[in-house]
Length: 269
Image (cartoon, rainbow, N blue to C red; front, top):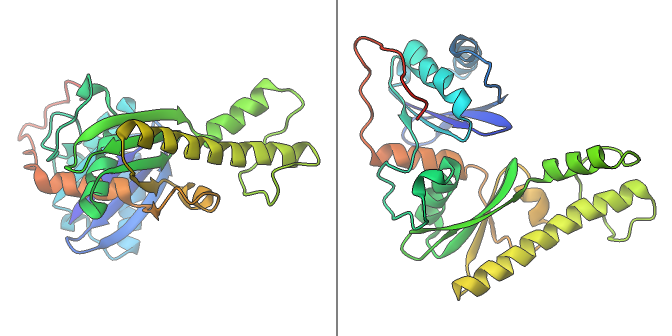
């Protein structure tokens, strides 16, 4: 079985694929201070609860945008599962060209989304990922990654509004029935939700205009279903896009060999 680890700025997602289907998916808040043993104790109990033995994990792949978390995640794979993980980075075989100025700068999650989206839906397309940041990533008909847009994530926007304005409370995210709010909190909810819908629609229109033809819009991330309710521009929702990108990447690349001497890591990739 394959252990898949997707480490984002907010959450780390662990999942297991048996070659035919996902056997389990679990989330943990991201913390660069959490040790490999803490991960191991937590994950082993969840695997056992789902009928999966540690010895059944024969390979692992990690995608992360949090360099500080990588050391302990790699140590987790070595010490608890006796495997050397494949770490997603631009230098691997992605099966498509990365047509940006500096491929090493692009986040692994964005390339993983591009890989999975083109594999499942074909191009040309744009992936909208609702994470800590909201990203728009463009893929051409042949699967080449062309770059995209990075905007502040919805939760960052809510927190910034609360922190910068003393009289504005922290609010939750929801779809208001009306645009015009008749008190402070409904007005804030409208601005956050419909403002973000406007951002999504506006950027998709401009991306298509620059690309020169219509694009399929694939939405992923936890808030994708909520914002898809407010616009017809998001044609497909795929919550497991990044995880499946990691699975596909592991199929394209030879798994690393576990060092016999278990030498310490000398870099954070």
